[in-house]
Image (cartoon, rainbow, N blue to C red):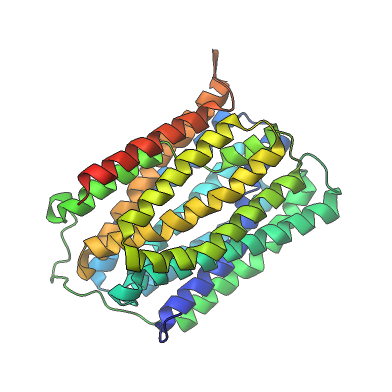
Length: 397
């Protein structure tokens, strides 16, 4: 590992680790809580996930623009993490899907506030030759937190419901209580440990966020990412696919642990590889692996097959997530990174509503209109990934 990485890279990585310890033990159980405890349909699960991501996306744009205008990143990042920490405990009292939507939405607003300033702060703290490594390490720490959170949640479920096939309310409430401490520790660490990196190149009246002022390559790349995301519905549907193929709640947790372990271990090496081979090559590899895995999920016949494919899904995440963010930083000047990351996160989030809602409808239908079955969302996602990969090869030079 190259020496002398900026302190911010480590502080932001540990902050994400602690936040994901809290978040992943909760939010990966939400689709099971909604279906097993509250009795909602998959279309409602898709609606909740889509609304939460999409409405929060508007916050991502404005937060990035504000961070450019102010020339600072840290305060908005702290605000975003703080809001998410405050609302998670409210899930303890959730007794309807509307309550879940409110908490999920508020948490995503917090993520919207912090995402662009945090990524701009991370990019500004790394040299260009270490940018892929910095984002890869951040994603690795984030995912290691997810692994830890899932392991804690799995232990709570084992202790409270003895491996039952369906999630119970008391078990879920125990997980909510366990999530509180790491969420607040993350905010304290960020406030005390991070150092502000002033944005460069801003004007007295702030940076113009209009798309035509940004590099054309970035805008083309953003459009392609949106096309890809239209087929990338919430991972909640993979969780439900695992249960539909016969996995118990604890086995679903094991499947998630496998995924996060693969993602965490490979994110750093793949990020560093993108520094040497180029972002585009690694991203193409990631999207092609996504298409292959989604085709496998569509055809999966057993819970074991779904589990194995979700483990391989971690390879896609390790290849694509950090690399895409480093690519954004490569394509825009430092003083406009807040706005660019805001547009990037917003593009992904705005595509999440139709993606997740469509996945729910394809699976189970809506009203009198029946769906096409559990395989349909995964066939659709694979097709969109192949389309986006072709456009990336042809359009981004």
